[in-house]
Length: 255
Image 1: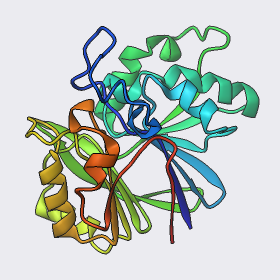
Image 2 (image 1 turned 45 degrees about the vertical axis):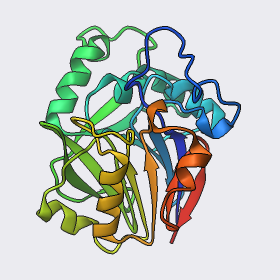
Image 3 (image 1 turned 180 degrees about the horizontal axis):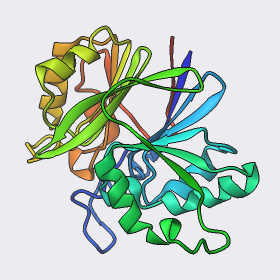
């Protein structure tokens, strides 16, 4: 059994620097309030997080997470990595480093962004992490099999991840036929859908729905949603019966 919690389903994309006054951002429906995209996966007695964006600390507090077995990174963009410093709380409580799974390019970006973590002089209290390579082959975390799936974010290679009958894709707008084969037979597919209008590097709503139709999972959940998508309840009412607009703190279970 895999239990997935949507820690955040939103994006920095399209949000102005000043406080947004659009109707969606002013909505009183909690499902329209979206932190940056991330998920918590509880499986085999462990907590695995995918991406640690700027809202990571609050997301961990809100979900009452007291330990992390690993963080998997999809790619190096700041809305997916900026909160990594806050793993230091887990270091302090659990007295151990956190395992960070990422491909080499993403690791190099993390080393630049958090250079103090990797400096020769280890300042007391800095985050403790073990960098572990992701190279496209399936790997295991305490007995749980993780299958990376290569997707493209315009020209930037990104990793999606499949765990059992669940797959999680964010920041993508193209998947090769060979990689799509790794996404067959799913019970649940989570995929990004930025807005209804076409975008240069993210699936639009219609493109995400076309992918769902092609891969035919039992259910699909849309994430990485900008306020340009519209109101949660109105959009979900337009979706096929097996497709849902994800929202922060939504929990689902996958056999």
